[in-house]
Amino acid sequence: MDKQRRATFDNQLIELDSVDSTNNYAMAQYHAGLAEGGQVYFAHRQWAGKGQRGRTWMSDPGHNISMSLVLDPRPLRLPGQFLLGAAVALGCLYGVRKQAPAGWTVKWPNDIYQGDRKAAGILIENVIRGKDWICAVIGIGMNLNQTAFPDHLPHAVSLKQITGRSFEPLVLARELVSQIGTQVELLRADPDAILDAFNQNLYKHGETVTLRKGNQTFQTRIGSVNEQGYLVTGEGSFIHGEVEFVIS
Image 1 (spheres, rainbow, N blue to C red):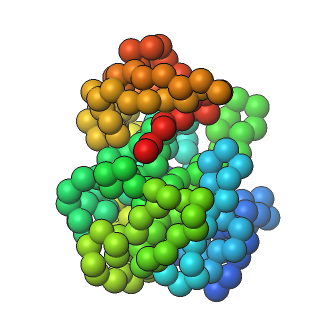
Image 2 (cartoon, rainbow, N blue to C red):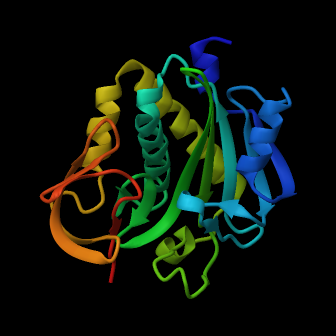
C-alpha cells in the first residue's frame, strides 16, 4: 500500500450498530488482520467510549460522531506522535469551521473547543514494535445533536447548541475524515506547517490563564506547543498530564 492510499480514509467507512469503544473494536480488527491503514469504523451507539487519561467519553446514541480511523503512520517516526495528533485535530477543526466559522480553537493537546466549551476529543492509541511505529488507531468523539450533558461535564457543547441546526452524523463524519486525510498528507510532507497551524489555532494562545499542577494552581501566559508536545508557558514547559486548565 503506497503512502497516498495509507492516508486516504474516504469510502472505507464501516458502520457499526453498537460497540463498547470504536478504538477497542478497531484495534482488535487490526490485530486480527482484518483492518489496514485507511479503514474507518463509525458507531451509531458507543457505550464505553474512551477519553484521555483513562476517562470515558459520554455520547447519546445516534446523536453524535463516535469513530476510529486506522492509520499506517509510516514514514512518520515515534518522535512525531504529538504531530500526528496535531494533524488530526486540525482536520477536525477545519471540518467544524465549515459548519460554524467563529470561535474554534484546539485546546492542548488535541481537544476541539468553541469558546470555553468542548465539542470534540481525540484519543490516539499506537502499535509499536521495537523502534517501529506500525499502526495508529485514532478515536474521535464529537458532539453533534446532543443538547443535555451530565453535571460533571459543565463545559461540553454540541454543534446543535452552537448553530441551532441538526446534523447528520455520517455526513459530517465523512467530511472530517477527508479533512484529516489532507492534514496527515501535509504532515508527511511538511511537519513544520502542521506545528505552525496548530499554534496559530491554539486555545488561549498569548493569553494569561490559570493552570493546575497537582494541588497547586498558578497563572501563566500561554506561549506555544513545541514539536515534542510540551506546552510552553511563562512558568516553564509542561508535558501532557502534568498540568490542566482551570476553566471557570
